[in-house]
Length: 420
Image (cartoon, rainbow, N blue to C red; front, side, top):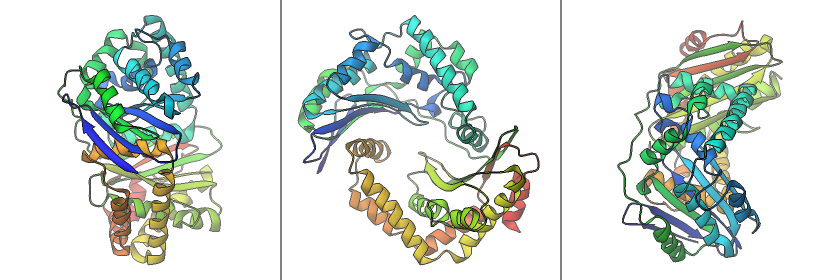
């Protein structure tokens, strides 16, 4: 398997990886425009724009977009995150050119029909309502908002309903003009793909676009704080976050290994202590996410309101204990889980394409998988214990509580327990 990278004169980048033996390919365009690139009055527009991409172009109706891909047995979708918006297809080898043509069409020729805008506005408002009715979904939005208050990176990707109600055609076109330049796009493809053919097609479809100055997002500032929302639910939802390294930070892999050892699987400390030994919850986990300049290690659990205090205290105690007695065996197990997750995921062309785009976005190139594995293997028990000590002691924190949480310990009480 060979990774190849090319850049057009206007800055548009193409990265591919041919995977022998496959008869299908995943092709997508990752745009460096997500939730954190929005101004406060634009919050939610990146996601709205993603929805509108499939609602018709100058040459295809919404139905024709879907039919063009599904007539050949393919799949088309998109997603919006805080740092990118991605548009991608999965098709057979013979239909790679068609797939890229459809994606180029929806990116370059959207019509933003006012009738379709109104229809999709209603769909997104329903999506917002559904998220608000899903406790173990909305709690992470509240947690993010407290971690990064008054910042674009802290706002919900879906946006506030008041914003969504106000977006019009001009707002969508303005966001495209500001953020959808060729130098803000990465065409990534993996599977049964021909690099030279894709570069030639990309030149034909995107080569005439004028390079634009990238509108860089503001630096993130993890401030922390507490969000407490009381409601008569069956379960109390608990989410605790700590500032962690961004994905360019040398400690990125240490943070990942730590969160896996703490709460990444059935053998992890939190799962064993909180669920298996004490039966305090059904679901508990820890995970570390990262952005360009910041990251969060997050612990989540759902339990009864009466048992939430005990669960929260044990969580802090387990974090402190990890700084003292994290064993080489636990670290080795976490490294193995991390490597297996990476390597198993790369058996899929969709995961390969996602990784290629992400690596080019972060580094401007694609480091070999072997280099990533070596970085994971280089994380020592001492590294993890030192990181655990920082999180258990001085790292800024944010807390979100939802449900029957009237008597739950607040962030101040948990902070005091951290340093006791």
